[in-house]
Image (cartoon, rainbow, N blue to C red):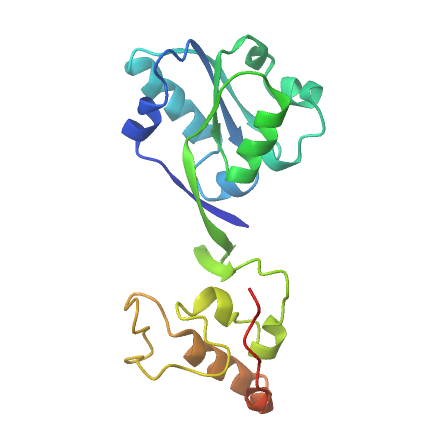
Length: 201
């Protein structure tokens, strides 16, 4: 799941000088789950833009903004989009890029793409994967140190954690404590003996 958060409305407005007719497009997958680009949020965005004096000609929800196959399928999700001078996309950056490739008018984001995370037990879990292209998370019980340790340490903790919290960000759990606890839980503490060479970036 792509973790996104809403941009400040003032920042969105800054991009809308001479915007003309605006269409607001949400996404039915990640952005809907995170309540930053589902139907209620698209409706609220349309209202706020109208209250700000903008001409909004419609809104819609793409089944998945990042997987449109054609301009025709985009139009099926919101026929009014064809008359728009500007499109606001409430999805991750990938969705915005795909929509941009299918239209010939300016496209602006209403969200910031924060991380590749997850959603479980009612909680958003950010920074679960760094998309490094070389997954070895199984060696760490599924807790990726590249994504979850701010120092990116691959061979053990830095020693700066306090009461299970990260030295760099006290609001964050120490990734290496999570790795240890998970490996202990599944009976694979032996994996901690493996040494990883520095990555070649």
